[in-house]
Length: 205
Length: 311
Image (cartoon, rainbow over all chains, first blue to last red; front, side, top):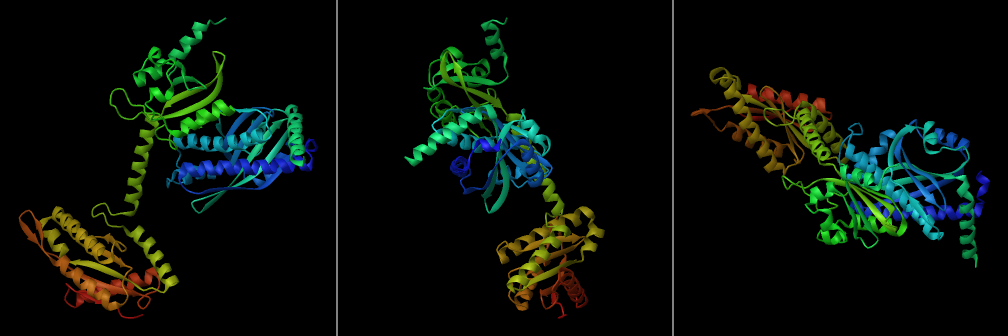
């Protein structure tokens, strides 16, 4: 599955993700009137089986975050993933409330969904815009799960391409680590392939 | 097979505001829920722009979301916490703001690329959470403060004292701890009752707090340990003479009479002073030194301050 994308194509995607994440950081910074830095230290392209192992290694058991579907030149689901007890930390940092992690808030779940929405929209839209393609995104949903069932939740087929993007959030002198996962339906992977090739050729000419 | 009118009826029954706008932001659909909230019915709303209806006071975040929706087909969730006033909406009966969140999605409506807005009333949730936060704030305060006098309690004092010791160690900056014991308090209680006693405590605690605030520019801590024992943490002193000067002044302030039900009650204070690090380098050691010094002051005739002996 991973062989669908060659090294050059993977490199382009990494570039585009960085741009997308950077744009999201600037939107978030404006939202909170404070500097939000987002960096992408690592991107992995894996299949489901490898992803499950990856998740189990990298992430603690209880996870929470935001997921949204996308459709267009590529289709699938995208997710922002945090260790469960830290998922609301991002919200608290942004909104500025000093409540402990165990104090639950309905409004904050909504805010978390929006933050995930901003980030995922930015990455997907950047990917589409730069590759001159169309994409559309659906509304975000908050979710909770563990590293075993989360992929099952996000992925209803066994043959998807998964991009696992590590994201580091830095704001108000605090740091948070999360992941973005893009589960791309394979029937759209060839469209992805073509778009990347076109872009690559344009770069070379 | 449902008729078109069936769907329209459902939209009319929804307990959420539904607005559909085209790329030019002209209203294509305006449901009864949103008509009720704004006082503008559908016939008045149709074909006007969103900006026009809402008097150009739409939050730029919503405008941006609508733009991204029509130009790039992106769905957006706009939460209340991040955007407290997306649209100027008010409760119909009280004129208070109607707290809301908005979902924006691309849709084809009447064969035009349009945006669907779903407006949810989150007022109840917002109010409930405000109450919860206020209650939590109260609980937090009570956990660290004495309910009668409002001074810090032993728990908070211990925390702050440890912090102060650590800071003093790091910066090699001395500070003082004062043990304040009221003289003749038991007499007041016995003679005039607990109500009088409590009143005296409250007044003297206020005096203590204010004297400390004036002296240390809000950087000290006044605590009540229990009964008629209070403690003062003085982070801004440089030497023991300064501490004694403050303590003497505090004695005179606390010795002034307290007016209660046409009586003039008088208690005084015996104060023990301990200095970091000479008279204790740890919270426990300092507390002990100050306590001993306070007993010394009592033994020497009360109504005065005494410094602890060096350890």
